[in-house]
Picture 1 (cartoon, rainbow, N blue to C red):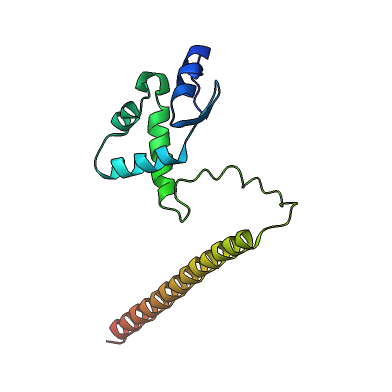
Picture 2: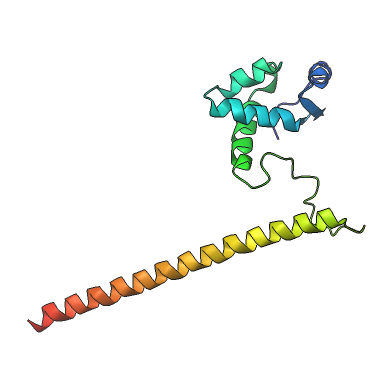
Length: 149
């Protein structure tokens, strides 16, 4: 969060923007569609400040928030779930209600994808370890041969 707080007037103006989901004196939450549009336009070469201004934001009011949101959304876009706001479901508390079949399937697919990534990482690590051991043995043989001469 930014140190700069929004004034009551700035909050009223920001709430009128259709790209704003919610705003308080400390923070602003943007609509999902705006985040997607931002990523598309950024990938086409537009500057973050220009994208925000074209979306009806006053860059002076947002200040450093533009830079931080841009960085955060570009990082999030690399994930499987994209720029979706993940704060709602990641409190770490178990869900007390029953899950629908679709939710169970979605969670299982995510878990499978995570396990695949972990397996690939471990396989690559194992391959690199074997390669390092092989290089070490080869360098020992070379040094032993040079000592024997």
